[in-house]
Each structure stands twice: as C-alpha cells, then as structure tokens.
Image 1 (spheres, helix red, strand yellow):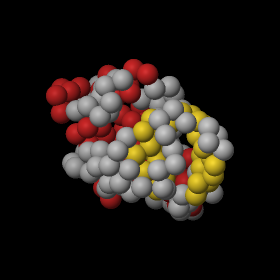
Image 2 (cartoon, one colour):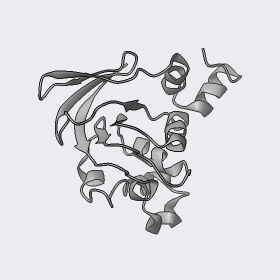
Image 3 (tube, rainbow, N blue to C red):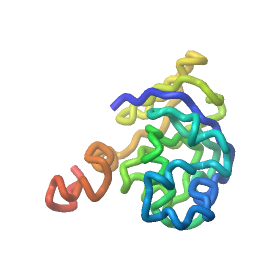
Image 4 (cartoon, helix red, strand yellow):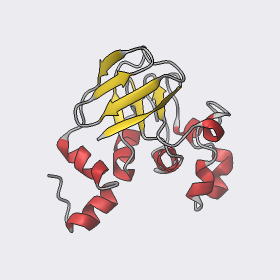
Length: 166
C-alpha cells in the first residue's frame, strides 16, 4: 500500500492531551466534530490546513499519556494517512493499529514541515520526494498490515469471523 502526502512536523513527547485537547471532552461522542480539533494545542493551524492523506511526522515518544482511543481515532478521522515518528508510546501504538491508523518508526530528522512524502507500508520504505532521499522504517508485521488493510481490529474480526491475523 503506497501512501502519499505532505509532512506536518511535530517535536518529541506529543501527548494524547496535545492530540485530543481535554477541553473538548464533551465531544467524545461526536468524533467527527472532535477531529476538527486534532493536535490544535501542538499546532493551532494543523486541523484546518492539513489535507486528506497528509502525514504527522514527530520525534520520540509520540502518543504518551492516557490510553484513550480517541487520540488515534481523531487523527485517522481528520484524514491523516499515517504517523511517522522516532518512537511511540506503547498503548498509543496498539490503539492506533486497532483503529486502523498506520504508524511507522523511523528517523524523522530528514523530514521537514511541508515535504512531500511517499510511504510503502509493506516494505517500510519512505521517500522524501522534496529532498530526493529514501528512509527506511521498521516494516509492520504481516498481522498488523492485515488489521490495517481491513480498516482496524473490529473490521478485521467482523470480516474474518474470528481473531485471524494471517
């Protein structure tokens, strides 16, 4: 699966509170509305200016904090095709895969705000078309690719009638 979009660059330790601001807690039952506020405390222009298919690119420990699924869910609902980071908080990582949001761990230092990025999830190859360089991420395991291809864990289970990963 090849993904293409523009990079939106963030730093280290982007918490679930920065992803999903607590002041919008009342919108947790209206996720499309909550998605309009995704990452606004980290970059107030992100939700309004990002385009469907764009990438969130960050440093280390992306998604630290609470274990609520709202954070990866609203990133996906906003239209982000994948998150690229040096590392992810463990619970955020699993929640993201479970809701169908692809994550790749890679060295993001060579990606800048606005760079045009192409990502092959199956191989972990990331092409920064703006800088004409290629980066390598740890490829996702086949089981996770299957979950992502089915749209998340719930869709995967509904499709296969069982917890089948391969």
